[in-house]
Each structure stands twice: as structure tokens, then as C-alpha cells.
Image (cartoon, rainbow, N blue to C red; front, top):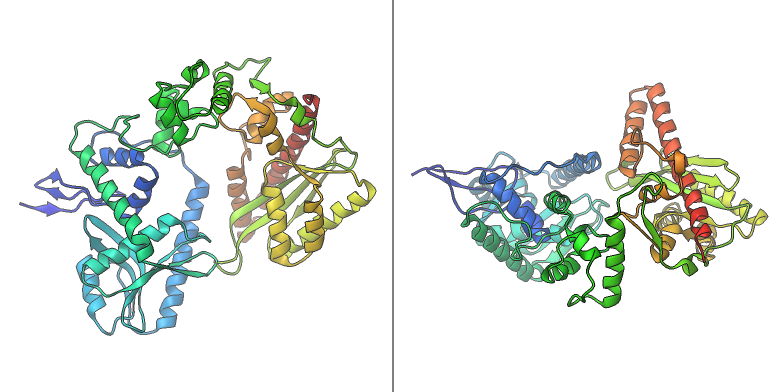
Length: 516
């Protein structure tokens, strides 16, 4: 009898005489299964040859974040190695048993990329550090600035596997976050949830592996997140009721229990649904009815203004009004891995149609752009005290406050502007009074209502993700000394931002025209 491990990008499926045995989960499976059991079982089916993989749309932004995460991990690895000096082991090519041997060596002080093996669990811990007490601290590097629960469970799983193997492990685990901070979490605080998640996932995998055929969408035994690639593929094919804007996983489950499985079925539902408030059900039914209406050239986006009186609360137009939109690069890095995120364009369109951009390509320029924008806006407020700054979503307010705090400049002025209700969020206005025939309420989805023949096409920079990639192209062109390409990239970004500002102006006017 031969036993061969088979790893296919996720869980391990040991082979015994060519037949797959019980699945051995990875840290990634812990996160995936905790979020979406259906998606985890789709992965299992692919590995068992029961179905083809789900075709995923490439996400360059996610890929870029992944690259940055790996770069940051390398930087932390180098820093820890320099700090420890002697006794550092690079375990990338070592198996779990070889790692255990290294840990038992008194000369070993630090191990990177340590393979660990526990009860039907395998993984590779970023760092193992020997503490002054001789116990090993299990640490993971994460680009995120918060200690997310899935990251805590991941590092706790590594620690438990090592402890079960007889390694003396510290009573806490450590996350080294993207801002350079270290967060230590007591292992006992994570033990119960880790055990629950691990046991549940093994039960899910074993139950399904013993069955024949691929996992069935809608099987009530398995939780579905509704947002991963596997879920979205099924939702689209089946016109699933989960495609209705405002339907969350718990609401969907209650609708399914009542036999309401599609958007069309929800649109026609007149009977109550147990567990759903009648008012909420009426709202969802109205939303579903709009989503099943076929668009026409005369009505490209079905809509309903259900509370025109709320739109009447919008400020009266002023000659000084500004329509504002930030463009930011969340994957930008300064001189260190902890210096992340840049607001590279403060785009401002006046009511008279003048577009005023404030550009920034490094931290000092970002500070200057902030000062320039705030001073420009204050000057306009002196001339037009009744002006308002219109934006779509809460990002602009939050980013402006964050920038003032980051640079410690114009803080009082920014606070006065934000506290004085100068900024008006049109997304909040839309959600309070308007329904559209779309699952998404992004401003791009709304534009058929008011942009007419000026609708943006699908080429060039048309979405936030596109802008991030385009700004990366600009930075690469600058680094390569390609001034022509760099200028073209900036012009594309300027046009994209100006269009968003114009769209905000047109949306404001459309909302006022439908106020009652």
C-alpha cells in the first residue's frame, strides 16, 4: 500500500493506492469554510473530479494586494532575522518532522515558514520565535491593520498543531500587522471557536465526501455566503432570490423556507414570511419587482421614488456648490510597508462646470493637496456661505478627516466643515427615497437615470478597481522614465474623476427634480 500526499491549491487529499482519503484541511480552508461551506464543498468536488472549477473573474486589485502582502512578509522576515542574529532557520524546504527537529535544537531561535501538521490539518506558519522562557511564539504577518478573526484562528491552529506535537508553545499567539504593530491574543480565548470551526468543517467535508455527485445548490445542510465566486455563479444561473438588493443570508434562508426561491417569486409574494417583518417584506417585494422589469431604450433603468418628501430635505442649489470625489490608491506604499494608502486626486467640480483637481503622488504632495483643497473650499464658503459639497457614499467625509489627522494640518477647519453639514452624501439620499432595478446601488448603476447620451462606455477607466490599476501603470511609467505613458495615465484618471463629479452633479439635480 502506498500513501502519496496530493495538494491542489487548498486542502490535502492523501491518496492510498490511488484512492483519495479523508481530506486534510489547511489554514485557507478554515477561513473559506467558516465563510462559505458551499464554496468549500465546490473546491472539494473539484479535487475529487466531480466538477469543473468555477471560472473566476480576474481581480488585479486583489492580486496586487497579494503581492504587497508577500513583500511585507519578506520585510518582516528580514527584520526578525536581523534582530535575532544567530539561530535562524529558513524552513521553506523542510517538512513537519524536520521542523520539529529544528525546534528541539537549543541553538534554534527563530524559524520562518515552518510546516506544521495536526489532526487532519496542515499549514505553514510564517514565524516561530523562541521566547526568553524557552516557549515558542507562533506569529503571522498580515498586511491588514486589524487583527481579523480568521487570522487569529489561523495562527491559533498552527499553535495547537505544534502543541499537540509536544512543542512548548507560548500561551498566546501573535499577529504582526501592516502598520507595524504586534497584537498578542491569548490562545485560550480562541480555543473554543477554533475547535468548533475545525470540527464542523471536518463534519461537512466527510459527510459530502461520502456522498455521490457534486454538492447541490440550496442544500439546507450547508451555509452559503452568496458572495464568493461559487455562490455568485449559482445565483446568476438560477435567478436566486439572493440576487435581490437588500436580501442577506439570513433573510434568504427564511425566504427559501417559505418556498420563495427566485427574484420573480419574491416579486409576486403576497403572503407573509415567517421571521421577516411585513414592512421589510414589502420593501424587498418592491425591489424584486423593479429588478424583473425589462429595461427599454425609453426606460433603461426601472426605478421608483417611494419617499419624495425625503428628497425635499436636500439643500437648495447654490452657485458655490461643489461636487467632490477622491481617487485613492489603497496599495500605494511610502518609504516603509507600514506607510500605506494615498489619496492622489482631490477632484472638485463647481456648479458652473469648472473642474479643479488637486494632485498628490507622495506624502508631502498629499499634505499640500489637502491644504490646497481646504483653503480653496474655505474661500468659496466665504463667498457662498450656503454652498454644499456633494459626494456619493461616506468615503469622502471619512477620508478628509483621516487626512487632516494624518498630516496634523487644517484639523480645526476640516472639523468645522464636517460638523457644519457642508458635506451632503447623495448615496444616503438615494437609499432613503429611491429604488432601482439593480442589485447594486453604485453611482455607475444610477447613471442611466440622468446621464442620457453621455453615459460612460466600457473602455478605459470606468470603475474604482480600474483606477487603482491605472494609477499603478502611471507609477510604473514614471519609474521607467516613460513620460508619455505617465501623462496618458493621468489624463485617463482625470477624465474618470471628472466624470464621477459630473455624475454627482447630475444625480443631485435629478433627485431635486423628483422631490415632493
